[in-house]
Amino acid sequence: MRRNCSVNHVLSSIQVVAADRVCLHEDHEPNRLDDTCQSISQQGMLLHPPIARQMQDGRYLILDGAHRTAALQKLGCHRIPLQVVTDADYQLEAWAHVVPSGAWLNELLQSGAFLCTNEQGGEQIATILHADGTKTYVTAKQAGAGSAHLLALWHRIVQSYSSSYPVRRIPQGLEVLPEKGMVCLRYRPYTIEEIEAIVTHGHVMPAGVTRFLISGRLLNLKIPLSLLLHRHFDEQEWTAYKQHWANSLRLYAETVYLNEKEFRKVPQQI
Image (cartoon, rainbow, N blue to C red):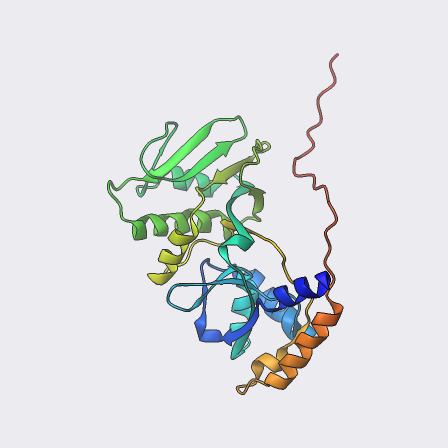
């Protein structure tokens, strides 16, 4: 009885909404979007529904699954299945990015749009941690820059390296000194209210900067693409799938241990 109650509760969070009622809060990575489109199209199904939160204007804000959502829209789906959560179901953090230093970094430090110093001050857009442990604080050179201008500068920073280099994400709070030839860029965490305000004004954040830790995530539902492509949604087929999930979902609650730190070999003393 207890299991049935929990399954019914989590299944009640699954909703199918019109594609135009879904909002992305972050930019997408073109190559990753193409790969996601190809994967969903070849498999003919969506394995994991995106995670969303309903906004005050009634639309649904994607918290996790931006590329899956964008892929479904690009494939022409009229509806998108979402796992709709409340504020009690997630924690909001930020990702730091570890990337190679290079010409992009020199151009950034010398750009007329940014003020880069080794002292904190002003409204920081980014903090750059170097391999030697020193930090560079990046702010807007234009005094009193508005939120839209700061957001545009943030996009410019992320785009300057993500378009050329692979990005390794580091969880918020994990202090990792980048290896030689690398830098770590940290950004301040935003509140859900700030993110919703950005989206309401028609903007998005850079790709891969927000981290949502979701409680009770639904996985491997295998929702057929054909069901989402039809203009007229088949409610009977959708109900049959929900009944199937009610009998086949399994809750995993095992404890796991994840190594999040790089191994750095200590040189032998002679």
